[in-house]
Each structure stands twice: as structure tokens, then as C-alpha cells.
Image 1 (cartoon, rainbow, N blue to C red):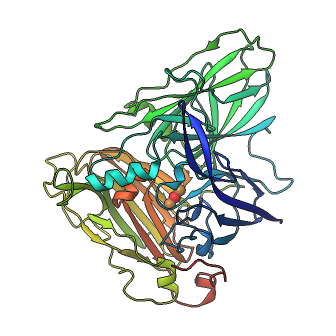
Image 2 (image 1 turned 135 degrees about the horizontal axis):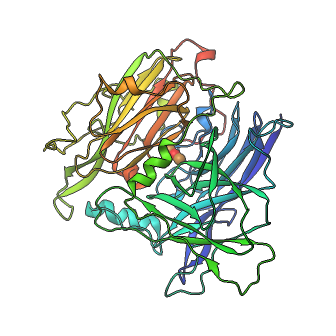
Image 3 (image 1 turned 45 degrees about the horizontal axis):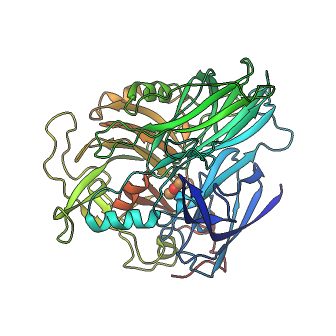
Amino acid sequence: CMVRHYKFNVVLKNSTKLCSTKPIVTVNGRFPGPTIYAREDDTVLVKVVNHVQYNLSIHWHGIRQIRTGWADGPAYITQCPIQPGQQYIYNYTLTGQRGTLWWHAHILWLRATVHGAIVILPKRGVPYPFPAPHKEKVIMLGEWWKSDVEAVINEALKSGLAPNVSDAHTINGQTGPISGCTSQGGFNLPVENNKRYLLRIINAALNEELFFKIAGHQVTVVEVDAVYTKPFKTDTIVIAPGQTTNVILHADRNAGKYLVAASPFMDAPAIVVDNKTATATLHYSGTLSSSRTILTSTPPRNATSVANNFTKSLRSLNSKKYPARVPLNIDHSLLFTVGLGINPCSTCINGSRVVADINNVTFVMPQIALLQAHVFNISGVFTDDFPGQPPVTYNFTGTQPNNFATTKGTKLYRLAYNSTVQLVLQDTGMLTPENHPVHLHGFNFFEVGRGTGNFNNKTDPKKFNLVDPVERNTVGVPSGGWVAIRFRADNPGVWFMHCHLEVHTTWGLKMAFVVDNGKGPSESVLPPPKDLPKC
Ligand code: C2O
């Protein structure tokens, strides 16, 4: 195995989109940022140097970080931030992982522009479990605000209201032509007739799940969140922030130009509806430049049935070579409600502010990193009394609870090393039913079941798929419904779990698990690196 060295200089860079220019925070001056290439089991060393005025940290989304939680990256969870002028070397090994993942800033809203792909190829000589593609291409989906993103969220926190939605969506950093600003280009994807392309699609948007579609073509889904799936064909994919989806595109149509489109999916009422579409072009070689683009349109924003059909088709490959190791006996059976609430706020516009919670706890970020507090036994930083069951009765399908209030705390849930966990995530619709893409750090999990309405502890588990459920790191909790996941707590450390809609994370839809037996080296996190940032 190899050691791969990267240097990330985090710098400001002027960027022009939608006919206006603003400075953005970037890695090495690029948006999206550079791709990290490696192979399974390689070690990756990334020296991150902070040249901007913000505190910074970078997360390697989906990398398991077995016993190396110090390199995971969420600020105040596994590390103190890298302060302006400082640097930190992230050092981790890609044990048993291959596929598409990504990296992003994990502090403030910096991940809007500080993100890039991680491409992990199989070990040398090991083929993909599908016909070899002719070429591979990263497709990064994102969002763009004309204003400074930190100003957008700061204003919202001051008023207690929801922040503005973005002004555009992007495909590999480009919006495509937008009315009123015709100079804006779109990403161009050249293909040759009859060749196969592996598209590594990543949703790096801050606050929107997305539909993605290519005119005139079906694609074959072969992997999600860096785990192979049973291949299936679809004309539309659905992808939540944090998720990655690999598809094979067979360029089997007549020469021509075909529109590629990405637009939001959200099954919830909203005050400001975001239905802007980003466009790119699939360009067959030999196409006359005068030929017209063949168009397509993505499903409407609330096309829940399209999203459900896609999600239901996802299955683990579960072959001899790539078995699905679903935990069958469960040590911890947890039920977490996720949703939005309202807390009083005397300085806010309505005298209240929107908050978000898990089991009615609005998570409060600590002043020093939880992993440090855990490993060095620093008391007073967190408590480990996170409720394993909802403390307040909820009834999504009936009268909603009239208690929207949440309690505040830095509460963790303690798991014994190697114990097995079943976690049902239930959208309560306390304030409004909404989709919540929930991401767990440090683990992959199996999605064993999902449904609408209230989870039924007696009947629903009988319908769980324990044979070939999809394995991933970010799962969409359906609006007004539930999803059940299972995982083995085989990675000691402190592991963040949160909604990957950035606004919900900011509002408090987050918590952390602490995994440790306190039984010494093999069941504990490794010692911290010497250059670990200090708070
Ligand atoms: Cu992709 Cu906690 O993040």
C-alpha cells in the first residue's frame, strides 16, 4: 500500500457567478476543490494550512477512521479548529474501503465552497464487480449564494427565522445558463459513442436533496456511499447532501447534445420554495456545434414517489466477495425523533427562534473537542445521558404534540465497544414534516427498513430486510416517516451524528455517540498526533 501526500492551502479566491463577484474560501484556489485519489488500504496524509480569517477543520466524509478519530474533522467533536495561520496534518488509512467519498469543511457554513471528491480505487488488479468503464468522471453538485454564506446564516440566527435559500445550484461548480445572466456557462461532459462512463456523483449542497437526470439516457446505479449495490437502471437519481452515488452511463444514443439537470427534492411545505435547476451538457463527439440540445426536466420538487422508487431499489450487492454483514442480534435498540422545534428568544423577530432536535435535545457545541474530553477524562464538557427513547409523546399521524420546546445539552449516548445497535430515526413533524438526511461519522450502517407515519415496534421489525439491505453513511429520513438502521459499534471514539442539511445542523439536529470499553489500546482510540490543534 502507498502513502498519498496532499497539501491543502485554504485561501480566499474571487469567484464570478450569476454575473456577480465575491471572495470565497477555497482549497488551493479551486471550486470545487481538488480530488484526492488513492487505493483501498492506502494511507492518506493531508497537510491543511489555514490562510483565511476563519477557524477551520476538514472532515473526510465516509472514511471510517478506525481508531483515528483525531483525523475525522468535525470541529469541537474530534478536534479543536485549525486557527488562522495554523496547520494540521490529517493522517488516516482507508482500511477496507473503496469507492466515491468526499471531503468538506466541518465548521460554520464553510463547506459551501470548501469541498472536493475522494476517489478510492480498488486494490491493484482487483476489478470492479461490473464491466470496466471506458472513463471515470466526478460530478459534484452544489449550491451558490450571491451573498457571503456566513452572513446568510448569521442573519438567520439573529432573527430566529429560516435563512435564505441559495441563488443557484451548480454542477462541477457551474450553474449553466441562467436567465438575466447569459454569460454563465455550464459544465460540459464529452462522451464517445458506445462507450461506458462511470460517473461519481456527489451532493455537496448545503441544504437541498437533489434529483439528477440526463436527457435521453438511463443510468445503472452500482454503488452508494462507497459500497457496491446490486445494479439497477433508472432515469432519475435522488441524492441527499452527504451522499455519493456511482452510476454507469452507457453512451448508446445518436450523436448529439443532451441536457444534464439537477434540481431540489423536498417533501415539505416551505416558506421560500427553492426549485432552481442547474444544467450541464452531455456532448457526443462528432456532434455539430450548431445542433440543438435535447432537453429533459427533472421531477417536481415534491415528487416523493420518484424518490421512494429510487430509494426502494437500493440493495447491497451481498455477493460472496462483498457480503452484507447485517447485525442480527441487537444490544441497543434506540428510537430517536428528529425534527424542528421552537424556543423562546426575546431578541428574535417573533419572540421565538426555530431550533432543531433529536429526542427533544437541541445539541449545544462544547468549547473543547469531545474526543479530547473523553480520552483525557476532562469533566464538565459533556454528559452521557442522551435519551435512548423519545422523552415526549409524539404522534405524527394524529394530533401533533403542542409542546415544541426542546431542552439544551451536550449529551452523548454511550455504546460498549463491539456492541450492536438498531436505531430508528422518526421524523416527528413537530413544527413541519420534512426530509432529514442523517449522517453518522465513524461507521457504515445498514438501512433495514423504512416507512411512513409512526414506527410500530411490534409489526414493522417483522418486515425488515436483514439479507441485502443497502449499506451507507447518510440516510434520508422520509418526511413524516421513519427509517431503521443497524450497525456494529466496532470503532472506538466519539462519533458525530447529524442532519446533513446544514441549516438543521446549525439549529441543533445533532448528537454524538461515545464508543469505548476503557479496556486499553486495542479497544480504544490511538494516541493523538503531536500537531493536534488546541482550543
Ligand atoms: Cu459530511 Cu458531519 O459531515
